[in-house]
Length: 280
Ligand code: PDD
Image (cartoon, rainbow, N blue to C red; front, top):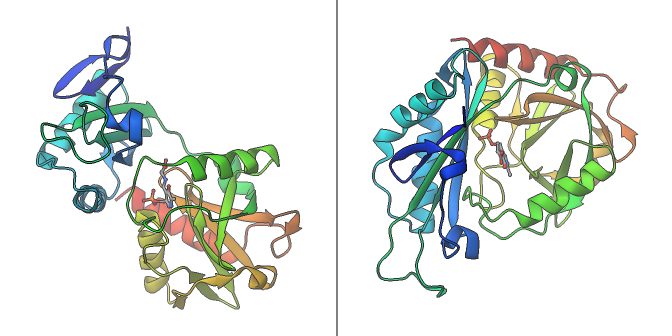
């Protein structure tokens, strides 16, 4: 049976879905998105995702006020696609809609709402052994706090990482580490955890927030300051965190080992607490 997706109020087979070539998502990447993970049939931090979506829509000036219906839509998608017994993901994309291509907002426009469910298993190999990352220049715009579908710089950086057998590219802007192409970045030195503060230069990651809550509860000191790229070589541990990455140890960066090249104790503590929190 064909996969069922949600498009503009209807649950339809994916191979019957029609989106206008003049959709502004297609023409201008004029839209925002969210990715939510379901553990044992329950969404992880759903309210946080909804809050961030509301903010992205507000900042992008896209009018969509049926946010309260989304949870039921996602649930139906998971049920219809038999994804409730698995770790599953929901991808939601809201574009400004479709009309004749002009840069400013067309007068008559209503948003295009698309959601799809997919199996989203944890990558236990990467979670257990750690991964390699590379550093890359952060060439993104100055509103990285909006979860915009305009992701070409992220895509190019992620591909550069893949070509170097790495799983993520860590962005550096003006000599300061910001975040990954599709994850948040944290590092540990002498028992203190460092990460870029919330600002226009990073996405306010929900997993980042959960990790900082875990650190607070575990009495791990937190410093929310951008890490100078030159300081990376002095870090004992590094982590990439996100809805897909969960809490993944970084053991190699640009061909240099992180610490002794094995996941460190603070990373493993955070990882354990993170997975405990997904079961609550
Ligand atoms: N990426 N920073 C960036 C640039 C991201 O794209 C993401 C998530 C994160 C982590 O945010 P969160 O913990 O809320 O997932 C940080 C999603 C999953 C993606 O693009 O698929």
